[in-house]
Length: 287
Image (cartoon, rainbow, N blue to C red):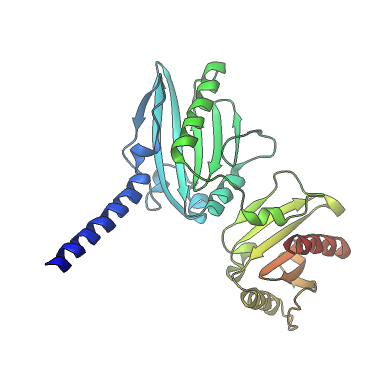
């Protein structure tokens, strides 16, 4: 009897924990009440199965970054309606990836979440697992202030840790094009064996791109690099800590190098020595 009671208590505890985890992501609890505004939470929660129903053909980009669900709400004050969209992704890295794919360096950036930007009637930002979009068709100074107020309340309610992916700190600062960093979640350069990668653009030497692939172990990265070389018909084994020129028929010559459990590289760099210099800077940052 004691065993049965203990088991039931344990099961109730587990179900309670699961219920709490589910409640954390349920639509209504994600949206805070805001003084002076009537809140309407949309009951329907979109998932990967039906995201196409609402995104006008743009669902593919979100699904590529492991989209989990979309919660919607409206804040109304008289004739003014502010729409809120909360896109949740599987990891903060994927959230950064979809956000970075849509931002433009010319936007007006603001200090909210990890980063955000605003324009007429629009405020978007990302924080933790959430990519937040807020917009209204009633655009004036008053609604602009209201959007920022609602954004601040959402930040508090979501309670996410706001930070940049650690790999971004490895990119050299000198020569980097501001806010050019991206995250490719899979099939980097069109190859499934390369997986995911962080990239950044550089203006030095006519312009080029650096990439960082973070593997679990150095052996995994070495095997990945070997597959890449084999694809290009190059039979030499990759030499850790020494740059190798990859003769990619689709992406041009790429300078690649293994450092610990990272594969780093330079794409489109006309001067080999310049590319190596930047890769060595990344290597030094890793050290």
